[in-house]
Length: 318
Image 1 (cartoon, helix red, strand yellow):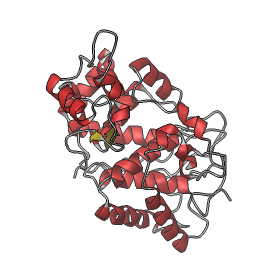
Image 2 (image 1 turned 90 degrees about the horizontal axis):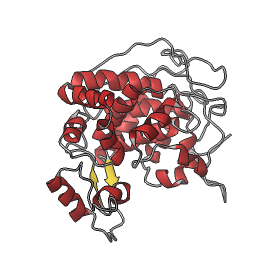
Image 3 (image 1 turned 135 degrees about the vertical axis):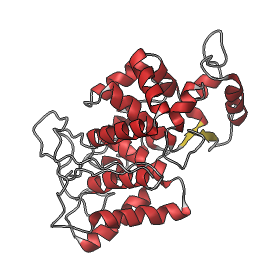
C-alpha cells in the first residue's frame, strides 16, 4: 500500500462567515486513542461487508456537500420531517451502523468530546487506507449540525451532470477542477444502480439509443445488466474493475470508453480535465497525491449553518 502522509497544521475553511480552524492535534490530550478506535470499527465492519469502504467514502462526500462537513447526513428523519439520509440521492447510502459503532466506542473512552462529523471524516480516510489507498492526517475539530433536510439533497452533484454543472457545484464549495477530477477517483470503490446510468444506454437522444462515447461491447454488457424495463431492484454494476481496491483503474477505464456515469464521461470534455484524467491514469502516485490534497480540502468545508454541537448519538440532535 502506498502511504502518503500529508501534514497540514490548519486550513482556511470555505465559509460564509468566520469559523474555527481545524487542527491535526485537536484531540491529542482529550481523546488520544480516538483514531485507532475508529480504525478498529471500520476494520471490523469490513470483515463481513466489503462494500463498507465505498459506503463511508460516499457518505462523507454527501455530508460535506450539504451545509459543510457537519454530520447532518447521519441524522434520522423525525415524523414528517425527512432528513438528508432519506432524500432521493441518499436512499442508497448504507453502513451508518459503522459510524454508530465507532461513536459508541469513542464515547466509552472520551464522553462528550468527539463530534460525529470528525468520526465520519476519519472513517472515510480509513476506508481509503484499508482498501489499499493512501493514508493522511485528518484536520479535526468539526462540530455537528442540528439541521438535516431531505430537500437539500437536490444540491448534490448528479451522475447525469455535464462538466459545466459539475464545475459550478464544486466551485460553489471552494473546490477546483483538479479537485473535481481527483475526487471523482473515489469511484474506484463502489457500485452504481441502473437508474444512475440508464440515460446512457437507453434513449440517449432523439437519434441514438446508446451514448456514442461508450465502448460498444461495454455498452452492450451494461444493457444486458440493465434492460430498458428493468424490474430488478438492486441491479447495477461496479464502478470499476477492481471495486474493493483503491487504485487508478477508474481513470484507465474512463479513457477506454468504459465509464459508468455521464458525470464520469464529462471529465473528458475539456482539455484541462482530460489532461488530469490522463495524468492520473498513467500514475497512481500522482492520483493519490492529488486525492489526498483534495480530500483534506473537501473535508474542511464548513458553512455558517453547519456544525454547532457535539452529538452523543449521531442520529439525534441534543
